[in-house]
Length: 42
Image 1 (cartoon, one colour):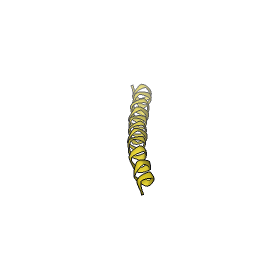
Image 2 (cartoon, rainbow, N blue to C red; image 1 turned 90 degrees about the vertical axis):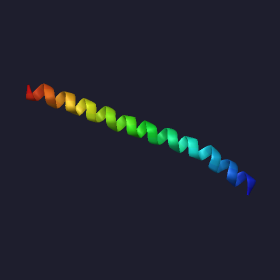
Image 3 (cartoon, one colour; image 1 turned 120 degrees about the vertical axis):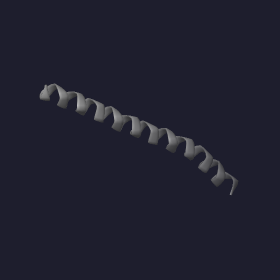
């Protein structure tokens, strides 16, 4: 049971970091797509 608990505590920060990376990746893609679209529009 103790090993299981340690695994959970190790996994949660990892999951948090991955979700942040994905979030910033999506925001970065949206930024680039908007930038390219605005270049084509103007």
